[in-house]
Length: 550
Image (cartoon, rainbow, N blue to C red):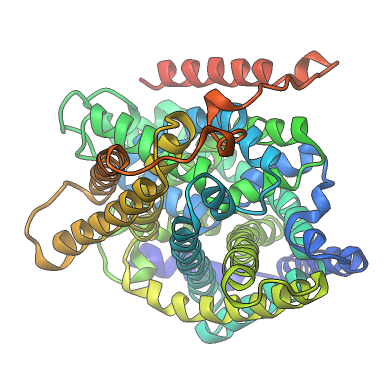
């Protein structure tokens, strides 16, 4: 508590007009991008998919930028302080293989079908019922995850700067609403690209200054004095590690189900690749994003370990002010001088805004195309859907304000988000894989399997959290095992129902099932742009990092 009080006193003394000016410049530039793009929003495709005209380097950085919300920055730093370097699994085994898979196998399906959304793909492969259920569940997911970004932003600035909690929530809501209404997905994507560079600029100095202060990597290990905090795989033969889960749970629960379920089926990130200028650019998008993803543990996880070496009682004092969620903000307060502190706070702000905007733009697309146009007003002119997209953007942000307060009931950001992913994304992955690679999968097999798998995950979470009938381990381990169980239930139910129901004719499955889809080669004249080259380089770096930190 004394260290916390000292940090807050130091912050109030060190925060200066320069820091506030940097934050103000960020707001001005972000809104300026929206104003600059407003004249390009002539059609619904311009608003929802950027007219499919963006270069792959922009969509690639936006692909990773949309992922850099409260979960990535506060959540990863928090769990690093709680679990150590094991948290890097969420960046490496929990991301890289799936990002490569979505580039090589999924994007040709998504982009080639010219669908506006993941639910749209489900309609083509399965039926209207499957699309409708996924559209509704995805809408709920995006609003809930948008709320956690909004709540985290408000709490951090409330604790660090003394701003009103309610004022912070409504200010961030108004800010996001304006620049999405002005520039649609393009505004969100360009701002996510800007936010990517801001986040790197704000967090990289934190790692460098922190490591210098504690005496480098060896000095950090000596200060924490817990070898389990510095190994990825040692101790995972059993449950004798901070996660409390063995390597099977990590590889299958996180590395397969949670990871592939997020990167392959979550429209929040897929939408960025669909905005690329052509099929080749769409395939490159996730691969370009793999490279910053490989190195983000060094700027998001290491600061969490550094602040733990200074505040060993972090997370044990009660209240958000003492929670692990404050690891990154407290590290900034401790190490950054005026000016650099403003840049760091702006990086945090950018991460929250990126997470909110990504979820809201995905929500307005799915609502307009897969719910409103499908079930409410089918044959309206394009201008009407553009208008509806803007209206539902406002509605989505207002709903996010409500879920921001709902998120306050969870002590850990990662607990909140991983619970959502295990419920919504895990069973959906089974539906996707069977639909893509087994042509015998039937429309009703997919629908019933998805329904039962989703409600199975909800039931497991409810029984564990509220009825205390069993425990699947730590919060991290619980999410991994629950995701694997939900995926398995959906997988088995889908196969069983498909064997007793009628499949679609093969003629209707071309372009939707891998074995029935012509493999049109993407011709790249420049070797380093070829997907197989980018994927190979990413995999080599991935293996090397796992060996180094084994």
